[in-house]
Image (cartoon, rainbow, N blue to C red):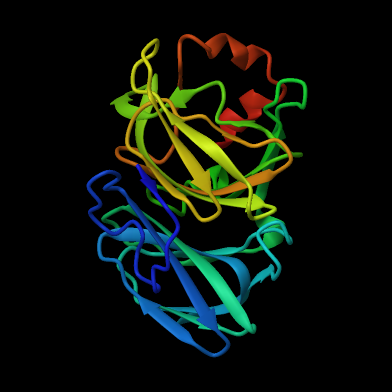
Length: 280
């Protein structure tokens, strides 16, 4: 499902109980200096990530100050985030001139402990090549190394390296719990382009060998992925970024099932096996 960009007025773009991706939650909050946003999402663990600007976070009497080091755009430095336990009351206070804040969430019924992830604690992986048109970089905010501190939520930022190219290829899916071959994870993206008038294409193909759908994605587009194979690409001459939320149904580790028609290309793309491992 494609949700074109709109002024959401700090209200969830993907709310709790969404019919397409029920295990995901996503909000974009825009604040001016000294403004405060308070939220609580029952039954969902969440993660606060400033896209731009700096904020202070208060969660159940604990404080995580000066979160966020990017000011121009999402390419202006590395991300930071705070893990928010399920159903916790959270206050976000803007301490820069302005801030745009992503709130990612996944359905989870246990209450864990909050913690902060600073930029020097981000888990990086870069793979692909210009030759294979698959060159990209991933910055894991809540990735593999936090399995003992997070319930079902995975949060990362994905960047195409250079201008043009494909992401999410070889095509894969994760819409069926049939372990150990595949896990069921709902997924939500929010896209940005550099320059901002750039755009791309999101493909969704339910059945290998049968035609699927394609969506024209622009700066600020949100994509919700319930099922199917889902590669995406960016126009030549532009860079692409997407904020990624994954919510596992029965486990946190993501197990991708590669589309049979294209699975052999896993062996042709440099570093892709490291990328796969980082989501497990």
